[in-house]
Length: 313
Image 1: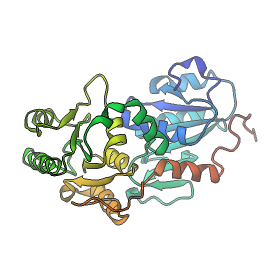
Image 2 (image 1 turned 180 degrees about the vertical axis):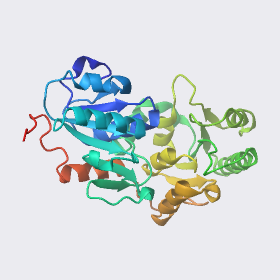
Image 3 (image 1 turned 60 degrees about the vertical axis):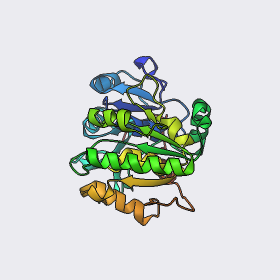
Image 4 (image 1 turned 90 degrees about the vertical axis):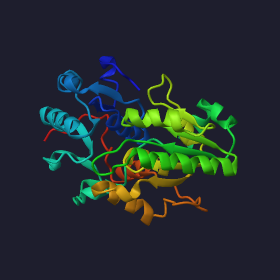
């Protein structure tokens, strides 16, 4: 991934960098899935409009995710009409017609010809990605199977969970690992509160391994690749989507606490037979929305004219 402005003219795709990892990851995943000839160029949001004025005039792809990035996408397309194919991920809430394509979660219930709905959050996970992560994190293969991974986000307004619930999850996970003689992998994220991380480190079963996101090397991708089953706190739509993109059985923790879009997403996963309560699923069908959306965009001609001079009417 290019990270400076030195390759502005060579890049056929620009990604607006709003400094939000969740947004950047979704944009990168989509760009990769589109199979572009060159690596996307990350453009800091505050430099995007000025940088766009300096490049030669030809059709490029412009990706944004989130409302702040959406404003920059609109500004650039307005100052250089016809030079950009704009794809906005997540509802900008205003001026939806300003984008060539809008990719929005199903719960937004938007229905226009240029809008493509998706379930959960976009990510890069497919069979090739999982193989690459196994190669990158071989140490997890040494842990006894079955490997149970517990992925924790953090309590939010629409999906709250407590210290007591976390204690119950840890106790039950420990029992399962003892019964199966397997391993327990406890994974934290940016939103995991300090009290929960402390609870993991002090109250986790003896055989458990804590994967702290604050560590210099975050083993989360390796956990997804090597686990045999995952439990995910339902507050994290992105981690639920990532787990459901694997071939693993997934259980949503605190699902009964969900409200609003969290509840709708968990319900949609249940309807698709992707979630399990206690016993592992016999058959698993991964949900891979990024590759599906990329294929739809290509089929509908979203990339036509990329790299060519724009038509001036």
